[in-house]
Image (cartoon, rainbow, N blue to C red; front, side, top):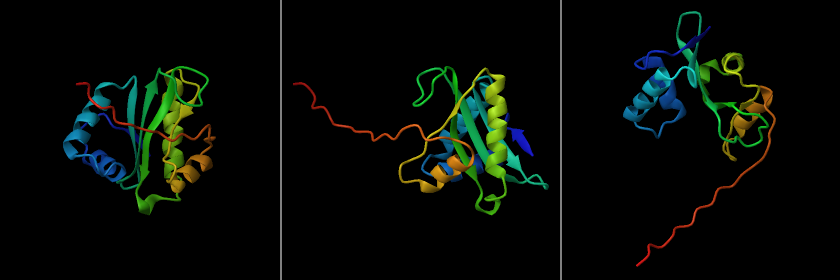
Length: 150
């Protein structure tokens, strides 16, 4: 069963978010969760629940109006993050979450769903391919400090 998170105090949402992005402080997660809950037209968080109502997975998505690498339309739905508990992997949880994100995106006029994964996250890349995503490009970001004037 897939459920939309509309209550930013949902413990399972915070738990799965913390597992997906462990370096983010809980207070920052809560602020972002509140923002998502306030903006259902452009942001969504979905929980996948088992038969007993336990959360097995999370997907968060947005509607982006800026350019999304590899896309040819605008707006584009963007999968901001997806996480499935280790015990729930290989059981179709991610597939059900992505299908729900696609329905949410279509209801908002999007005809494309984009996502990204780190170059070294081969598991995520395999999951995306298995769920019908096509790789569009690879990018390496660079940064150079600029010396202050004076």
